[in-house]
Image (cartoon, rainbow, N blue to C red; front, side, top):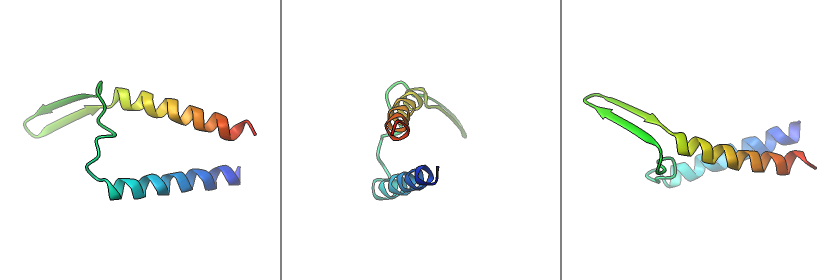
Length: 67
């Protein structure tokens, strides 16, 4: 369990560094995400991004936990 938490923390740090290096990337604005804009209000429903991240995390966790 400790090894898993260390790997997870390392992944979060690497993702944070990548987001700092590339702040204007459109990785989290995929086609299929719904965006409502009105006056002072913006609502973002990241449906496609959620599905994509769910698939990627499922694959990664299956690889890590099957050892």
